[in-house]
Length: 112
Length: 308
Image 1: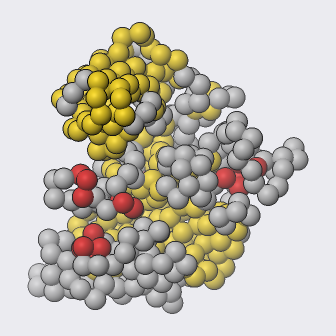
Image 2: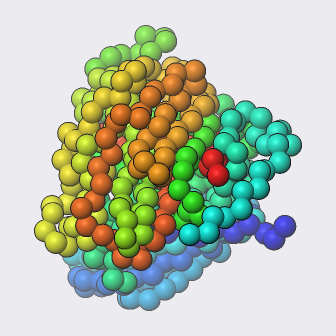
Image 3: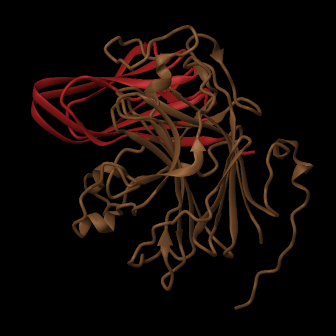
């Protein structure tokens, strides 16, 4: 059988003005994960977004997978590859700036 | 019109995973979620490529998940057969609904039967600000009252010369205050489509109905399910739902040993036509939380069969 794969859209043009975490997503069947963050609009000044991949044993308690982050300061797309995670993934997103507002898509692409 | 030839399937019990089901003569699909998501996807509302134009109630019904049913106290529960179940998960936001759909068209009108083994849970919460009317007593756990409702439905369209309707059945676990209700309900008004909203019908509070109270009790549908005390025990329930695309009616709903006769329950029909939905046959599951607590619906597997 071909390798299973699945793409989940976790944030769909949502607008955030402060730090947030994506909803917990179960990935126990997968061995590869690729996060995509695409900013479609920003407002405010000196806006900066940093997104860290987080792992969890149970969907309740979380830790950063590493100190590597996706960093963005304008519209566009970036990605982060993860391997060797447990059964859950989410992103911890920091938003900085003067009255910052970020509209974004967050997509998680998984492979067996 | 020429009828499609009728060729009976082989015995369903040739696959032992099917022996816990009771399908009609022809199995349309058997989705074992150990094998993948099998076409159950998020029911995102209609749009014109601009995602900002998705109507609010259909904007965020969340992606499907394959869950091994892992919990903080025991680790992995697993599903009935194997490891994985299809999981619907709400956000932790009052009135948020998670919804998945599987889309087919039909080759013939007649009886359609959906069977599944399901379980339902609210997420374990450690926030003492979230209160429900009853306290933990060693048997009853307040998390049971943090699960709102789940719904099973279809979306059928007979084509440009025909009618469109949704058969919709809901298990209401609590009221908005967290008092246990434990009733199966059917809806009495239409689902407000994007087309209807663009024509001026307000965005509803309840995705399935015009008004939130457009629901009636199903005779014989007042009973508790097996929540089993705590948020981390899952007990799988058998569900068998039959509807008839010839009469455009529900037929029966069976939950374990209880069978509810649905033949006399009215099903709202749209008074206008829908373009590009010829022979539409969709199956939908959703779950809604009434509290700022994630609600989950898990499906071990799904079998849909027909009588032709």
